[in-house]
Image 1 (spheres, helix red, strand yellow):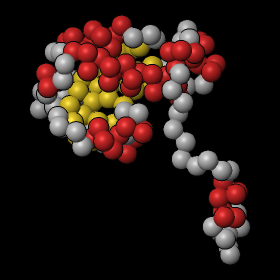
Image 2 (cartoon, helix red, strand yellow):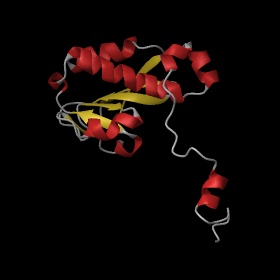
Image 3 (cartoon, helix red, strand yellow):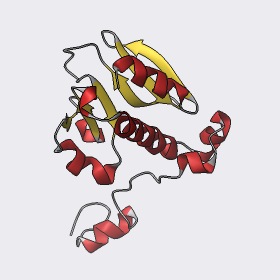
Image 4 (tube, rainbow, N blue to C red):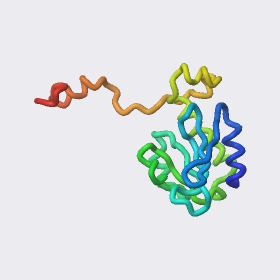
Length: 148
C-alpha cells in the first residue's frame, strides 16, 4: 500500500480522526489516542508507525521490515520504513489491530460516545500485574511502605 492508501484506510476506521503534527506527520487517533502515524519520507520515526498488541510486540519488532518505533517503542509501537514490503491485506490487518487495541483501552463510556460496538473494541488492554499492588509488596516480603 502507498502512504495515501494507508491514509484513506485509516480514515475509514470507526471513530478515527486525522491531524497533522510533528513536522508533517499524519496522526490517526481514536478517542484522542494515537493508533497510526504516517511520516514524510526520511523522517526519524519511520514511514509508517502503529501500535502493536503488547503480546505481539517483541516478535513483530524483530521481524523483517519492522523495527521498534523511535520515541514510541516503550509503548509497544513498531515502524515500517517501506510500506510496500507488506501486502495490502497485511498492512490493513496491522492497522486495524492497532485501532482495535487503542479502542479497547478506552473507557466504556468513551467507546459508547464514539459509537464503537463491543466487537470493535474486543481486545482487552494489557495489564502488567495480575494481583493487587498491596499483595505484590507482601509477596516480595515488604509492606506498602517498602520496609521489610
